[in-house]
Length: 170
Image (cartoon, rainbow, N blue to C red; front, side):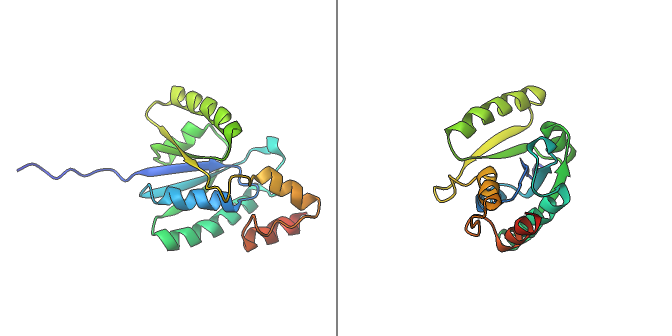
């Protein structure tokens, strides 16, 4: 009789700037949580994108959303900030899987390049792409920020918690 095989928990890493976290991001987090034993949502510092919300505010918003998703799915979700290479962040958090959301063809072009670079840097870390649901395909943080800056209503694109944060900042 052989010993039972004990598998390591499957850890996924879902990175992004999340400025702000949208309903599309929440959908990807919810679906990713069903694929892994533990999910790490990594909020990129990414000052080059001139974020509306600071890193700590973005982490707070993502944690708020993640708590609701954890309650619904039972999957532990940790939210962290990061400013290093994505593969290094994945390794530091024990993630063997990078999860990326795709909305449109333009996302695919960029993501293929990112996949190639990450795979070259660490071929042991896999990348999984989740397609945005049709309901969320047109939502991007960039457009949500633009609409908010111009005084438009973004309530249908973000949660009430995130809406309050964005409006307070603008």
